[in-house]
Amino acid sequence: MRREALFALPIIAAIGGALAWAGSQGGIRTGGVPVFALGVALAFVINALAFVPSWLARSERFYDLTGSATYLSVAGLALALGPADGRARLLAAMIGVWALRLGIFLFARIHASGRDPRFDAIKLDFARFLMAFMLQGLWVALTAGAALAAMTAAPGAPALGVSDAIGFLVWLAGFGLEVVADRQKQVFRADPAHADRFIATGLWARSRHPNYLGEIVLWLGVAWVAFPALAGFNLATLVSPLFVYVLLTRISGIPLLEARARRRWGADPAYLAYLEETPRLFPRLSSGRPS
Image 1 (cartoon, rainbow, N blue to C red):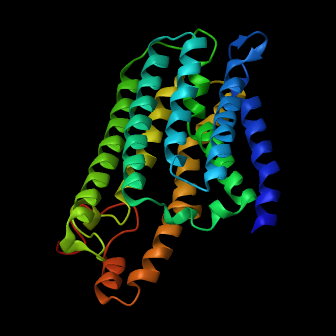
Image 2: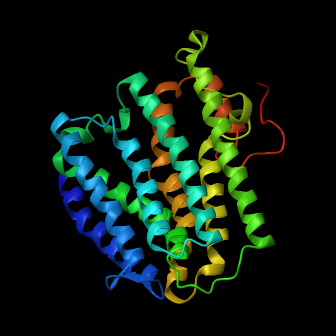
């Protein structure tokens, strides 16, 4: 695994560099440097700096909080150096509210539990732990890329209109879905009667991962609002919601969680029935099983 991590680091850097080039096309500059590229660089720098004390302590305690701080910093940079028009302020608010809420939620969760099982082996390996932080920097740059490109685009984008209101409502629906799903799971786990049980009630009776569905939808809303300000090569930053979907459904999110769940409840007939009857991501209009 260490060899794969060392191989992945230059790939991460190359993807980040390609994104910085594409998103900077037609964008504003400061001191001759594209503001978009500065935002991408800032995402990596923050995570590299956070990695140092995390490695020395062999702790993942501040990993998620670092991710949220990175979103806030990148959005703040774009807002401070960009034209700061209505679209830029709306995009900054959408990213800021989401990042602040999720960062506080995840930090409180790991503070209460003391550990994140995903990092049990990773945090003991320098290359793999560094890769996790660099991937987080790339994650921020890619997911916030469309918003960052729109916020640093040269003046001339159309004013906010009906289409942007629709995009905001899409974001709001995704944000609300993620908040409610996280809260339902938090309340479920806090009940001692639910010790060593899986959640299959509320939104979780309609989708096995409603929180991830919410995250995908909210980034679609962000890309929707950003789109009118984009042109040429920086349209490539619209990959944001697709990237979130692929990463959460094919690489890190759902596959890891479901593999862990199968190890824990794979012999439980109720869990096997839940897998059979409940959609993985996109819900049915009615519950797939009685709550």
